[in-house]
Amino acid sequence: MQYSFLASYLLIIFALWYSRREQLGMEKMILINSILAMVQLGLLGYALVYLFQMKHPALLFFVLLGMVTFGAYTAKKRSPLGEHSFKIAFFTLGASSGIVFLSMMAFGVIHMVPHEMIPIGGMIIGNALNVYTQSTERFRAEVKNTIETIEGMIALGAPLKEALSFASKASVKASMIPTLNMLQTVGIIHIPGITTGMLLAGADPLQAISYQLAVMYMMVAVALLAAVFSTMFSHHVIIRAAFTSNQ
Image (cartoon, rainbow, N blue to C red; front, side, top):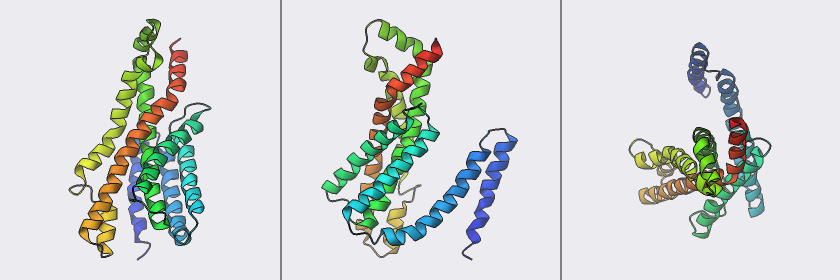
C-alpha cells in the first residue's frame, strides 16, 4: 500500500510522451527532476527526524544557508546570467528570504525551534526561487524587446535606472502574479497544507488560520523583495548582454 503512490508516475510518463510528441524538448528535464524529487523527498523524510532534534540556533541557520545555496545553484541553471549567475541568485534569495524571516522572528511569529524554522524557511526560500527565475526571465525579455528605447533614453542623458524602469516594473508585476493568485484564492480553491495539518493535529481553528495567514503574508513580502532584488542585482549583466547582441 505504501508504494501505491508510484501509480502517479503515469502522469510523468504522460508529460514525457506529450513533450516528445510536440517536440517541446523538456523530456530530459522532466525525467531528471521527477526522479530527483522522489529521491530528495525520501531523504527528507528521514533527515527531518534528526533535524527536528537540533537545539543549537547556529545549526538551524546553517540548514537555512544550505537551502539558499542550493536554491542559488538551481537558479543558476534555470536562469543563467553568465559568470555572475550564482552570486546574483545567492544575494537575491539570501537578502529577500533573510529580511522576511528575521522580521517574522523579531515580531514573534516564528520561533527559534526546528519544526518552525526549517519548514517555513523552506517555503520562503522556495517562493523566492520561483519568483527570481520568473523575474529575471521576464526582465531579460523586456530589456531585449525595448532595447532601442532604452538606448535612446540613455543617449538623451537619462540614468540607467530610469531607462530600465519600465522593464523592471513589468518584470516585478509579472513575477508577482502567481503569489497574488494564491493569496486571492486561499481557502476557496487553494487549501493550505499548514491549516489542514494543524486542524488534523487538534489545533484551534483560529490558531491554525492565523498561522496560515502569517505564512501567506510572508510569501507576498518575499515575492516582492525577490522580484525587486533580482532586477536590482542583475540589471548590469542583462543590459550589457542586450547591448552586445544588438550590435
